[in-house]
Amino acid sequence: MSQYKHFGLPVIPLYYSIPLLAVCVAALLLLVVIFRVELPAVLLAPPNAVNASSCGSLSQSDTYYLLNASLTFNGATCFVITGNNTVLDGELKYLLTGDNTPGTAAVIVIGRNVTVRGLNITKSYTGIRLLNASNSYITLNQINDSGYSAIHAINSIGAVISQNILYYSGWAGVYFESTSSSIVRQNFVFGREAIGGTSSGGIALAGSAFNNISDNLIKDSWFPLALQSSNGNNVLRNNVDRAVYNSLLVQIATGASNSFSHNRVSNSQRSAFYIEGSSEVFISNLSVSNTSGAYYDLEATTSPTSFELVDSYLGR
Image (cartoon, rainbow, N blue to C red; front, side, top):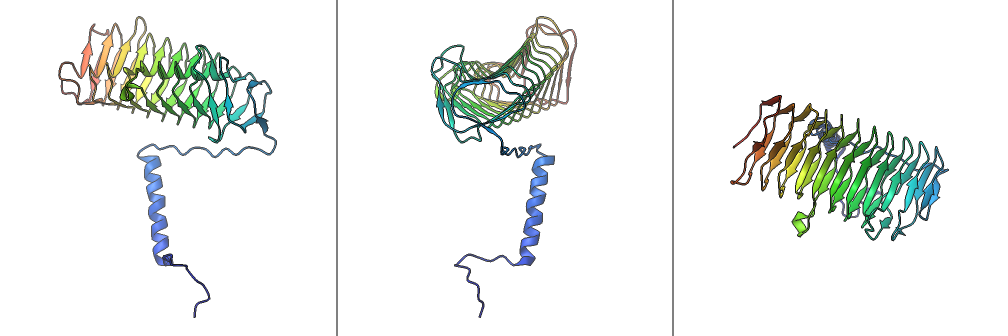
C-alpha cells in the first residue's frame, strides 16, 4: 500500500509532465519572440530600502525608496524626486489619491536615472511628470482618472515609458512636450469616450523629436495618436481602436521624417490617418478597417513634400 495520499487531486505522470513543460516553455517563447511580449524585470527591494510613508521630497541619490502606505494628497504634489540614480517602488500595494487640483502631480521627476515603478495612482491632475529629466524609466504603473495627463514629459530626454496601464485621462495618457530620444512601448491607454467623458489624446507629441512609439494599445480617445510639430519619430506596431475623431493625426508646421510602420487602425469615427501641413511622411504596412463611411482611411489636407505609402491595406 502506498504511504502517500493525494487528497483527490489528479497526479500527472512524469512521462506526461515533461512534454507539458516543453509546451509551456515553447508557448512562452512564442509570446516573447513572435508577439513581442516583454517580460517585466524582477526588481526586488534591497534590504537597505528607505521607506516612503509620507509625501515629500526624495532628494537622496543612489537610493531605493519603497512606498509602504497609501497616501492622500489634496491641493499639492505628493513626491518630488530630485535625487539621481533613484528608485521609487510602490509594488502595486498602496494607493496614491489626489483631488485633481490643476498643476499638481502624484510624482514629479527632476533627477537623472530615476525609476518609478509599481505605483497605483488615482485622481491626480498629472500622474507622473518628468521635468527636465534624463534617462527616466517609468514602468508597471496604473494611473486612473487624471484630470490632465497620466504621464507628462517636459523638456526631457532618454525616457522609457513601458508597460503601464493608463486610463480615463482628461488630456492624454502619455504627453510629450519638447521631449526627445525617448521610448513609449507596450502601454495600455484607454480614454474616457467609452464611459461618456472626453479624452483628447491617447499618446500625443508636441515639439518632440526622435522618439519611438511602439506596440501600444490605444482606445477610446479623440486623437489616439497625435504628432504636432514633431520630427523624426518612429511609430510602429500600435493598435488604435475606436477613435471619436481622427485616429492617427499628423500636424507638422515645420520639420519632417516621421515614419509609421505596421500600425493597425479600426473603428475610427472620422478619418483613420489624417495629415495636415506636414512634410516627409513615410507609411508602410498600415492596416485600416471600419472607418466611418463619411470619411477616409487616409486623408491629407495638403500634399506633403515627400510621401511614401507602401504595402498598406486601405479601403478608401
